[in-house]
Length: 336
Ligand code: TRP
Image 1 (cartoon, protein in one colour):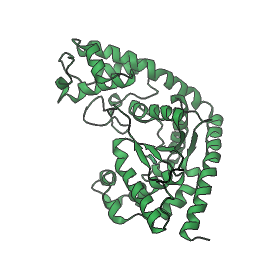
Image 2 (tube, helix red, strand yellow):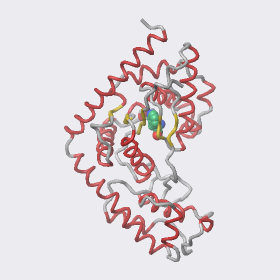
Image 3 (cartoon, helix red, strand yellow):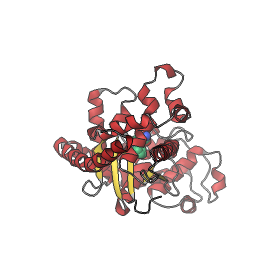
Image 4 (cartoon, rainbow, N blue to C red):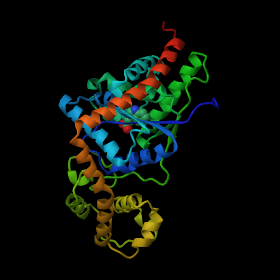
């Protein structure tokens, strides 16, 4: 790879009015750490959102609330570039070019499409199918070198590398796009549903008791943790004892993650305690780290003008890089 390539982080988050603990521990907190070390571009990917129908009023609100969540979690809009994807038209333009680079056979292997389209595949939007090409465009438009992603997006990032590689080869420009690397959080275990330790914590699960939302009150958090599924075994220092106990493991992982300790340390600390005592500690830890963020989000949501200004500034900064790169890409492809 070209040695002169500058490190740059890109990541995208789908607009959601209600970010939860999984989003925070799995993505946002990591984004905040990364911005201390590298230049970062974080996009609210509204073009991706409409691959399934979105109510326009709700979409607008979700975009705004995602900006406030970004800021409340600690993203620094002066340092990092924060913007909404649809405001930089180069994303859609490059996605089209990539639609012509990417292969049907590659997209046919994407497991997320299969899951999301489900049995009613004929009725899925074409956008949902080419979603990974747009994601590749997001990343490569900035020639990003590092992409923080969760497990579920690894395959899409592989496809992005395939596209970059094919583009570089097809157009005899072997060093044009860097091949972006995934950034996987060390020692991170995915945050699972509080009702079912085998399912990812998700906004789409019916019961609100399955997740901790960033805007939950202290009371909500206490109640949800109290009701969270566990078992009646005592906690031991032996990790092996957590095998086949996904709910117990999930709560202990959440505690470790929130308090930034290892699971081993948590187990030692909690050894001999039952889950009712542990849950009290967990609730306290969650309240201490989540509630201040929730309050900040609510405060920021009141000032729509400020949020729009943040997005507008981010868009301007993003466009400087995106438009320059797109111009080069168009020349390479042969557009006049
Ligand atoms: N597909 C990602 C998700 O659902 C969101 C996303 C869009 C993204 N573009 C991206 C992530 C670029 C990383 C890089 O989580």
